[in-house]
Length: 212
Image (tube, rainbow, N blue to C red; front, side, top):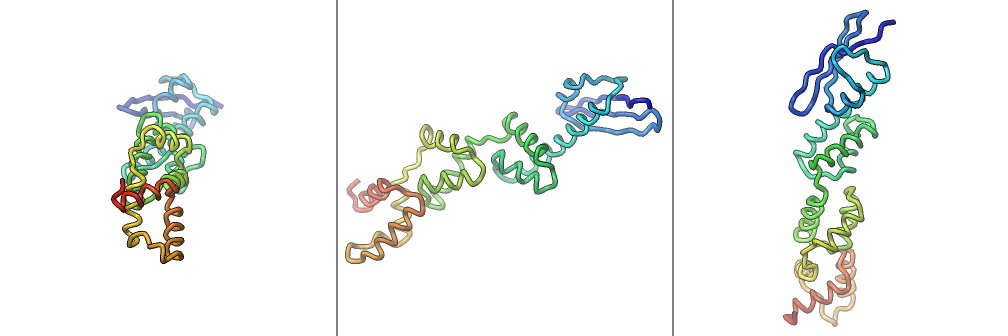
């Protein structure tokens, strides 16, 4: 049996098309890949390609297909690496292919998780009136790493959670008076569910009473 060989390699701006020919049947197989795989397998025109290396080319072509699908998904909305990999799997890509494509998009800067965390945290705070704990939990659920979330809160967060808490209290009609203990308990329960700390609530009440 005569091994297949590479008939042509055509480079584009971001990709390379590799044409493999079966010398017995003259059947051609074309793979569109990211160029690094060509260096990995040492491919060149006229190169006799082993089954193992053609499998690497085929896999690289599937990763590139997932990469392109990932680009389309990112054009619609922000996604973490984990979210994007999950979406790619929903579209039929195997887990390893989906995760590798998502990692490549992250490495080239097309998934900017730090910026996404900031945008989503601000939206959750100012639009949904969430506190830090609830925001962190929701960001984790979206696939962002807890370490990255905590780092953003500790080093970059500019959200005034006391002011956000005050807005949440006002949206519920204000904090109930001492003569309504059950309503006060319900309000506190609501604020804790929203992720506010006791300190946030204390400062929010001071703001609402004009004392801060």
